[in-house]
Length: 315
Length: 161
Image 1 (cartoon, one colour):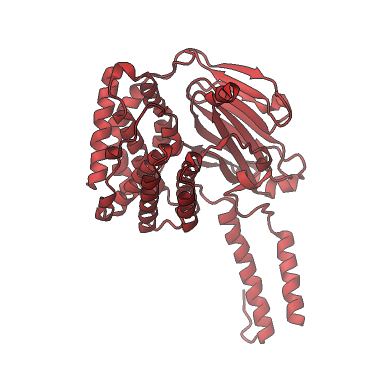
Image 2 (spheres, rainbow over the protein chains, first blue to last red; image 1 turned 45 degrees about the vertical axis):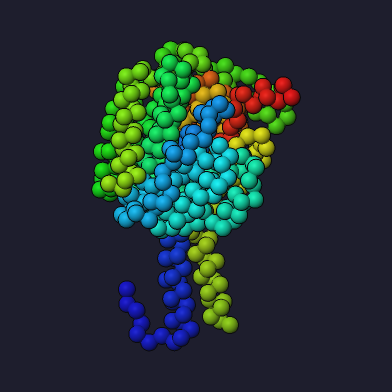
């Protein structure tokens, strides 16, 4: 294409705009419509008939608050000694340690919130904000959230929601900015800390049926997380080393047999206006679900404590 | 003045022939789109709720963990040109199809109760019945999946009160 050398200012302006507008549209198409979501591991194109179609698979898992929220804490007492020391936050230097610790602090925030520990909730909320800022995650926790937590001292639900909000803000930021590696490292920290808190709530194997089932149920969460993590392993050596550190825990979860028997689906009709049709999904073993043998529990506890120590020591 | 007319003409021309993007930012569609009408005060929003951009030619699969002893409500929403939403629930362990909303004329909200913890794959595509062939090829819009939950036990508490 020959560009005329002599153009008056008006023609020049029109020419520039006619170049810039299509560029802007193309850019918005890329980021607005088909940006790579963080939790997607598989995007397949089907170019048949010249039309592109995609199949995307998302591997999702619950927040730390949701993982811990399943545990019935009615008869349990808050143990501040289980939480990662708040005073060590400035000792984490590299991105990997900081990302792991962001997950750990988020879980400790959830633990404090679930017990309604107002002061500890605020402390860990501040820690989450600091650590998120250090790895350049904007507005994971903002002033409004801190103020909201201060004003809702006695409302357990609000603290729980704030804890979830911080987790969702971090995920949303990472998805927008295609930082899957950060999500993997943060989630590894969060997952290990939630397991650490759960294994330490068990004093007597024989009397811990509910908690053991909770630990076994994390198999599904762990499977989804590891599938996602493996999909970004090759992109980042910190992700690869995080996955390697999780191998011992992975081995234990791979050994747990899922619930035996057929899945049952029972339909219940909509029970009123605004109430949707409902299906009840049951399993072959009724309410009992998955379980951990004593040996599996001891091995899991040991593996979790080892990796958690490594994270908290920043090694 | 002529310049402004030129610019206006070019903008109209480009917008007319560009592929339709029914929404630019899908991040919160599950809370801002039609799904918001299904929000229940006595339920929590599950953090595995998601909004994504997709075209009527795409298929999305979400592997989601559902904890046992909880009631969930799944709500699907999208742009008006993309309805109905077709979804299938598949047991992740066995691959067995547990439910297909085709049999209920593509209902958009479904309650789920889980006795024990399970992981399901939710396979989603949009049928875009209100769209032309060209729109189906070109349109990209937001698809939101809002998941809300509450404990089985909470019902008992209310009954005792």
